[in-house]
Image (cartoon, rainbow, N blue to C red):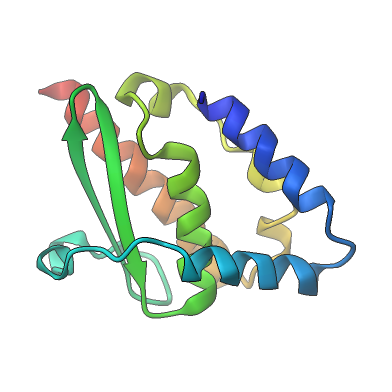
Length: 138
């Protein structure tokens, strides 16, 4: 599935909810289903700077795609990172770099987060794109 197709799927899913409490619950459920990151990757070097909570993001190459794993010590943040990994994991570096993140605005996520969580979201996206840049540079 392409990044755009996954984003459209997420927009459709979020349109089924009537209010933001239901959407928050859905995001939290996504976090609960996030595959566990290997404990060996829960290192300071994998912590995302700019997040209020602790968020670990690790990337590895699988043939020509980036595969991300992540974890957070905050349940809502874990759901947010799960949403991002759904979009960007198993994608090619060039596609990650070319992708926009308008789906975040379309589902209304950024406007319903506290300023510190919104900054953390931006930091997570930046880090995902940095991994893609690093891979392309190799």
